[in-house]
Amino acid sequence: MSEAWRRFVRNRGAVIGLVILTIVVLVATIGPLIFPASPWRMVQRPFLPPFTMDGLPLGTDAVGRDVLLGLIHGARISLLVGLVSTAVALLIGVPIGALAGYFGGWVDDVAMRFTEFFQTIPSFALAIVLLAIFQPSLFYIILTIAIVSWPPVARLVRGEVLSLRTREYVEAAILSGQGNLQIIVRQVLPNALPPIIVLASLMVATAILLESALSFLGLGDPNVMSWGYMIGAARTVLRTAWWLSFIPGIAILLTVLALNLIGEGLNDALNPRLSRPGE
Amino acid sequence: MIRFVLGRLVKAVVILVAVLVLNFTLIHAAPGDPAAVMAGEAGATDEKFLEDLRRQFGLDQPFHVQLWIYIKGAVQLDLGYSYRRGMPVAELIWDRLPATLLLTATAFVISIVFGVIAGVAAAARQGRWGDTIISTLALLFYATPLFWVALMAALLFSVVLGWLPGFGYETVGANYTGLARALDIGRHLILPATTLGLFFTAVYVRMTRASMLEVSRLDFVKTARAKGLKPGVIQRRHILRNALLPVITLAGLQAGQLVGGAVLTETVFAWPGIGRLMFEAIAQRDYNVLLGVFFVSAAMVLLFNLITDLVYVIVDPRIRMTE
Image 1: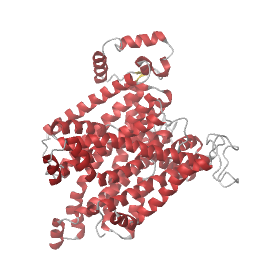
Image 2: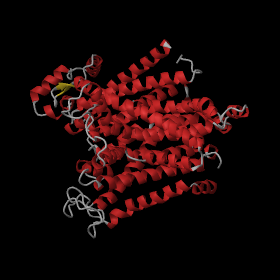
Image 3: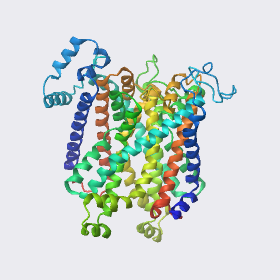
Image 4: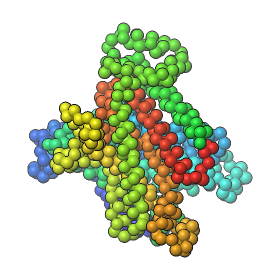
């Protein structure tokens, strides 16, 4: 593991990503404790530009809400949705991929046609339809993002399991009389973990983008402040108060960038045979 | 060739029927009365109206009969009625479809052309500043929210600089015809198509670069170099042709995301396509329109996939068209 960590920190981008993400995580966890006030509360006159008033460094939005407070509370929602929806997507994708790869035959056929179907249909349009019908709440947003993002997991896990199941230690486990489930969980999956971890870190980034896009369209949870909602609400005042759209966008960009950089760093660290040439 | 295309068409039809089954299931899984769901908020109060709907869709009949009625209707291009707009959904979509096809096809071409060119350029300069600039830009745009970059582009190029129109499909009231109209639409198309294509350009840059570098380390490339071929010829004939295969595969897979992304771009730029229609339907809770747009965009994705499959066959003659 220390070898992998050494390879990770040698990647400059990955370290930058880790620093940015650490800051975002700190803001998301500690921020709301330091600033417990509701981000929905009106605190000053509307359209106060940034850096014009003490105590309101980022100014106020179209209805006089504190922009900085919105960013802090939004960080929590973005990370929460990103992490939990990825976890749920793994819970759907890993079993489907593992069963398909391990058993092959008709199980594989059925599982892969199912996966292909979800990969072909336009996922963002499906997400919109699902949320519009089931009323947007944090629970349904997370579920929806998981439903549209599990197929790559299933394909990856299937491929890994397919190549691992013919290894000698798996055959040894079969001969020693272990059950199929036990072999999949104890022998095969642990060895398929590195690429799954890399994919998961990239999926958190995609999930955050997806959540912000849905909130932007007005399909966010109406009770929680999110970065996408802030941009969506400021869209109509773009001409007069461009910073209201600009600032939350930078927050999304930095967080997603950090996760992508970390994902690439993990890829280099955990799959050294795939790492870039010349290194 | 014909068998290959037929095989793909059959697969596409199966997927489309599956989408219809999914749509139908969603109407029934939704909280509340399916008739109220289909009527949207428009008919939720009128009991007689809901009663008519129930009879029309056979909602008093067994589940499989209802499903059959629904699929039969969709096959005859009956996607239901938008009670909000007082128009059949199919007609609404049909009016808006050309704008979306124009937008997504342009964005698709832009992203592949620029993505592959920039990816090849970056790979050729691996490790030098040209590569660093291209790779960094690709990394940035890969992490940028589509709707945000669209807003910022509208702000910069339309509001601040005034170079391009940031709103609509053509100049209202100008009544251009022929070439003048085409040019006018083209000017309106630039911002939406580029911003929609930007994310995918970044994807193709990264993919092309990685793929070019991987292929350039293979033995046959060394042979070509040893034969004394010019580097440019090796790049184009030997490396690029092989490096393109995974890019084309990816392009086919991403067509779905492109069509989905159109909802965001069309919303920002008031582009009168089915994406904008979908956005309006969200606020109005017009479920028939939402499901109809979902169905039609799935059909568009399948069309894009079929085209990329055919391109794949042309680029890689090894692929036998038997699948």
